Image (cartoon, rainbow, N blue to C red; front, side):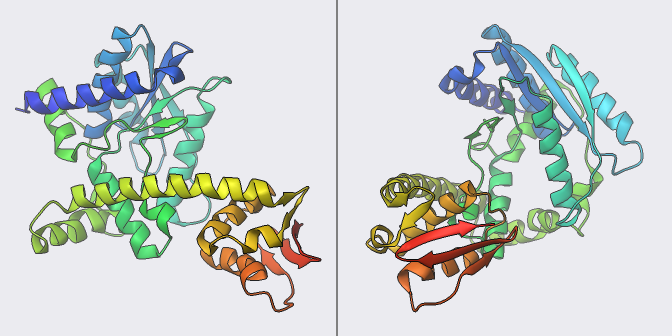
Length: 321
């Protein structure tokens, strides 16, 4: 049997999350992504409780990635279970997984794209069942890849249209909630396949860290992510002010940028380049563009992904396709 405390904790987390962000629910409809696993089923129950109390309609969205034999049956079962747990409607979204970055990244991209397409034109809020353990894994992945503070800061509780009300709860809470509800979650075979990096983090790296550091590692990593997000939000606000001061039409004034710390400059440059249509920026790209300001020696332009070039001319930075 599960713990009533676990079920109560999950329901309370969702209820409080929706109360904090009720401005996003003006359309009267709430969505929840359902895989059939413990996290998404516990979330669906809690979302149904909170939605109906608030007079909202709850729609469950089940993505069938078609990566395994029998995936259609798994998706159909998840949809049926979601309705039993209180969803007013359950839709199965079938996707084709392809693209760069390996099967994990491609499946994630296909899943998020399908969920976005399912939303009404005026937007909506989709609840995702990510837990504190998922956050810890995300932080470790960011650390291992050297992706910078944005990656190590992990997932945001609210990143419209995505809402993650369970980020403060351990995975054991959702398992306990499902046991208390008497529902049998689906166990994805991919979640036990050591070919996937996140699986090895979950079953090998995190347990080893918990043992070596005497426990509490997942919670500590989640706290670190929260602290980095707070710091990052402050830096983003300061860099936005810097960018506004430096703007001169489509170009940037090098004199204004040069007076700011490099960390703020690079954040401002990142926003500027993304706004110009440059994608897949790396830290190396940003540092090369920043060198046109902080380490200017008359060097040529910097090539950027998508056939863009950033260059300095007459005290101005410009970026052109």
